[in-house]
Amino acid sequence: MQIKLSGHHVEITPALRAHVNEKMQRIQRHFDHVIDTEVILTVEKKQQKAESVIHIGGGGGRVFADAIEEDLYAAIDVLVDKLDRQVLKHKEKAVDQRRQGASLKANF
Image: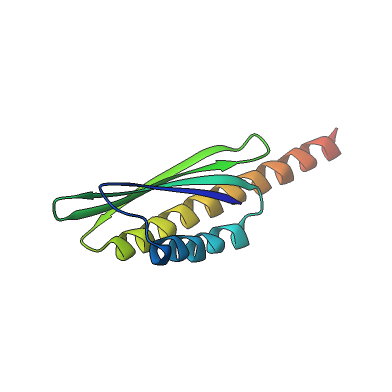
């Protein structure tokens, strides 16, 4: 999985980059068909925002999530939690569709 990390009004330090890479590995562990991820970190006054778009292979499309917290590391953690739930939901839908399709073919 390729991770593109950018920041608006924030410098991307090696520690931030390492934290994002470490957290995104959880998503890759749960679902292998993630092609690439774009993460944007933004600082606006007292709000820290993290948003991401994940591109899923096999005609899966995209998954988007964002999180706003007072701490940038907390925003990244919440963002990854949201993405993980969405990716697992997408994976379950794909598995269910395959199972239903197989049972319909067997009946005919």
